Every structure is written in C-alpha cells, then in structure tokens.
Length: 77
Image (cartoon, rainbow, N blue to C red; front, side):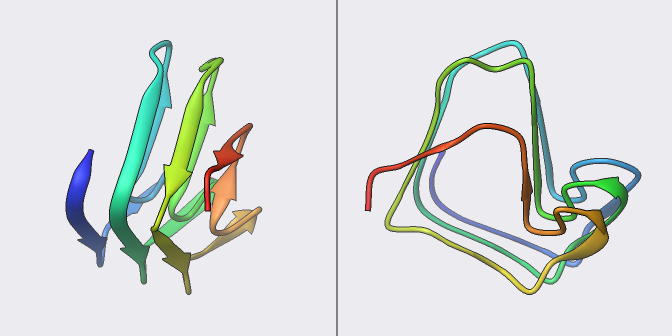
C-alpha cells in the first residue's frame, strides 16, 4: 500500500486495516483517528509473517489493547 490515508474508521479489531495471511508493505501511509473495540484501533496484523512499515504515520487511534498497532511489524524507518 502506497500514498494512502485511513481515518475515521471503526471495527471490532483493526479499525482501519485488518491483515490476515499475506505479507504487506506500507509506504507513505497515514493511519490516524480510527477505533477498534478489541485489538488494533489502527491496524491489526493477524497471522502475517512479513508486514513492513516505512515513512508512515500511525497515531491517535483508539481501542482496547494496543490501540495503534496490534501484531508483529517491522519498521524500515
């Protein structure tokens, strides 16, 4: 995913983005002001071995446990 913005979304898990089963790369992405009632108000990574984030902003999301990001990620700066 490149040059994208996710804001104002709501879901039980992964308010903006829910990943399950595939690798993913986030480049120049903003994930902000989303909500999730369970895990990951912004992003929930479930069962993905390779998820990378570069030059992105993930902030001000709300939710139960781990409001911005839930799951395993690699930061590339």
